[in-house]
Image 1 (tube, rainbow, N blue to C red):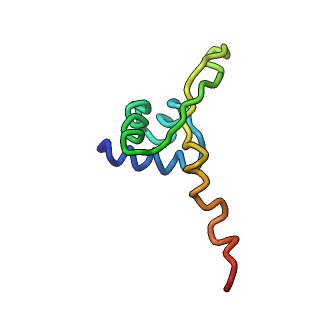
Image 2 (cartoon, rainbow, N blue to C red):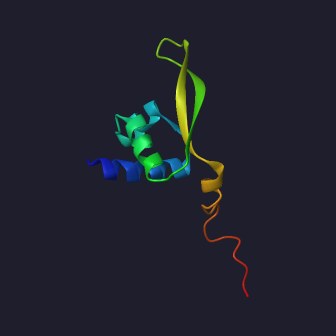
Image 3 (cartoon, rainbow, N blue to C red):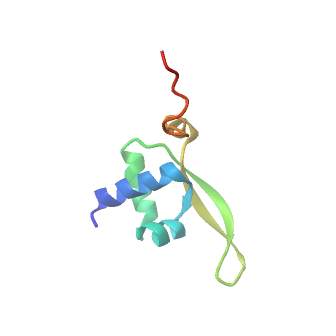
Amino acid sequence: MSHSRQNERLLAALKQRPMTAAEIWRDLGIARASARVHDLRNEGHDIVSTPITVPNRDGEPCRVAQYRLADAQLNLLPQLPGRGVMAA
């Protein structure tokens, strides 16, 4: 899969919810999440990286990055498509 296709898929997924690199790998099959986030940032998308703690496979706490679109970009997305439109 090309980088541009991976970028499109990752951007669409981040519009739905925040994701860690492990979730991006598991759900989208994108192995180099940080590289794709870098590409999207270079395209002008405001992606925030927040450190979170998750359990590793042994149940021990592990710090990872969780990627999400900045709130300003999320506000441009319809929360409930097809609702809230007032008739003239």
